Image (cartoon, rainbow, N blue to C red; front, side, top):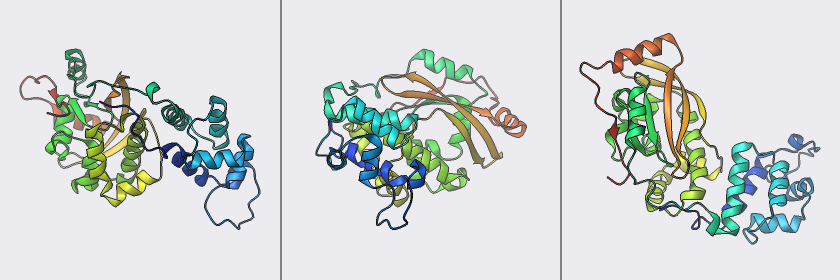
Length: 295
């Protein structure tokens, strides 16, 4: 079961340091002398912007202090120009670093059954493809259209199916995603954010170990980019239908277990026709196929 108590004691400091190093002096209205040994802002510059001492910022970055107050967290978020997802991530890191008992604890949430209601909703969304994902991209369930499209790409060959594993470990992913780098960036950012809450789950750790053997993954992981998936656009290349342009919406099904339903919508007439043609059943569509982590 996942909670954040086992995350690295340096995770908070590593995130703060990575956000400091991505900023340039011009980003915060400071002059740039051009003589900097390391990328980004200096500690003293961030400390001045946040109104904290340099020594305290050093202790936070080195993991020697993991109990910043709410006002310090807010001041650092402002100084480092964090976006909404990054602010949520920093808040969770600070909370879990100082009081692990306040971190999310989920008892068998990922392995529990998908409700009949959720399956029925996905089934009724056809011909729009829909998939239910767990917090680290395990495919928990999908409707017929999504299975027809992604199964032909090889996504469902691995059991349990996992989108991040397909992206980084399956050579077919490069052909399936012409914008592979953007897909990879997004997935690692979502996994980075999820790691705060799921770091002790053995299944999550096993997936991370497998992925971190790939340089393309490990380089992105070390960059500490974080995001929570909301909506967006993607392009996939289907072996029969060619290039499909898709917009997607993310629906939160279970906030505690962090399950999310992704619904694909056609972004152009060609993709809409492909959805109908590729997913039109020759016989009544059976209920959405269930994929439960651990089966």
